[in-house]
Length: 147
Image (cartoon, rainbow, N blue to C red; front, side, top):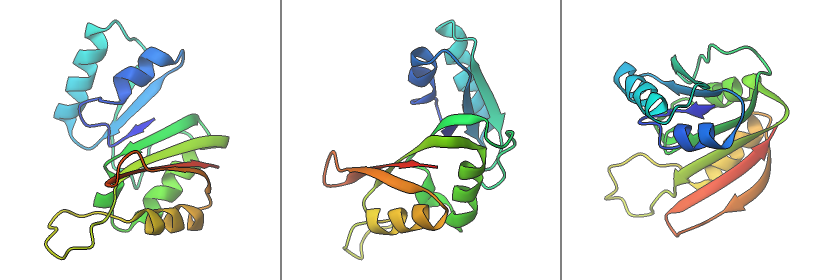
């Protein structure tokens, strides 16, 4: 499941790499149409678009193996409800991968961000076990968690 799928930047490669359905969840119907068009272009029949909000994911409980959230969770307030929704649809032992921009210390930043420390704390409070932390650049972090 690609949470906040946008243009399908992660949805399409995930669908190419897996043999099962890939859910692309987004609020914007235009983004979902773009994903559907890309899936058709690549002959991907297992992409399922879902027009929904992250704090109310309309998928069956324990139905997803991996949830991806790239550069979207910093926009969510309160974050706890959305993380609980992600956890609810994950199967036991399922993985949650979060990619975000590190919060900058300067007061001039007008873009919402959440620090890796705060994100990890939110994930743990939602019932995830953070199993890996990656920092590919000074500004980007990746947290891999398991249900």
